[in-house]
Length: 415
Image (cartoon, helix red, strand yellow):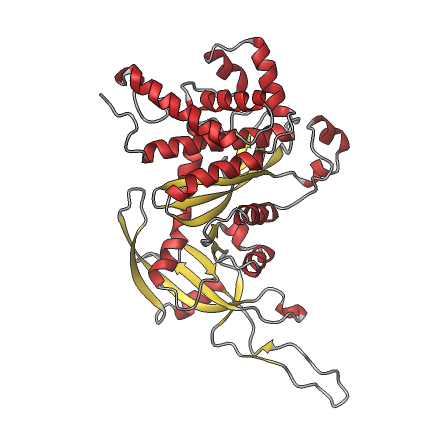
């Protein structure tokens, strides 16, 4: 366990290791106290301990072998993960309520990650594109939302993406123990539901960030905005918008007997955001400096800021949407911008804040690096729907404990 905290076990005195373990027990007990059965709480504590302690593979069998547990305990743990009807969202919420207030949270990040798999029986597995793999491969896709703060990061929730061909396959659903009420939902739909669930936990509202898969999804942006959530979301260069100079007016009927129009229409065609940014760059750009690197080092880059109105649905007579920020980072010497974002933050938002939020999404990699590299997020080998969600919830608990340990001035140090 102390190795996962960044210490070399041979260099840490036994008393310090015992102290860490006692803090782990106390932390997990507080998080899982809402589970109804003593055996569930015991299994949760043992599983989190196994995730944190040393070992390259964090799947169930090698973990319990390292912990010198019995075959009976293995059977109990299998049932606890795959079939026991405890609510993983309850465990995640208790962990979030304990950890997130310590982080100085500045944003939430929507993302998804791949879980490479062999075979066809794990729920949701198929050949599909994974950013983790950087290609199409046999994998599951998990959608997640994470709090990103000045002092660390924390997962706020997990959802397993279930492809459409899985949803209609009754035999595969039964074998993977997928509940009847689970229907097909896109990754953005899963993501916004995770945001809405976490928002109901009384956490301080902060902007939501995400890559193009989420930013290019107009229903997601509308759902966040209607719920009062601010966002800074990456968008594709080909996405079309109306510039700030666009005038919207209700057109006069073409004839005296014509049906009067009721919705404003633009006085020009929309344009791709790449074209708009190139057109206004000379007058609406500035150099922005802020602290954003892995160690808080200052970042200086050239950004273009423009006010725009999203063009989705205008040809079908939909009313114009609100005016928003269009942000582009255009590194000096490059022929075109590197990234584009759209944001519903107020019109008087400082450019430095817009740029910093736009660039902040990279911090999600800190979560995935530890969740997968140290805590076995992608090591679960079970084949049940509940098992995947139970595993990710307990990995979240392990991650939360390690986060607090790094922030604790009384944590053991090298001797």
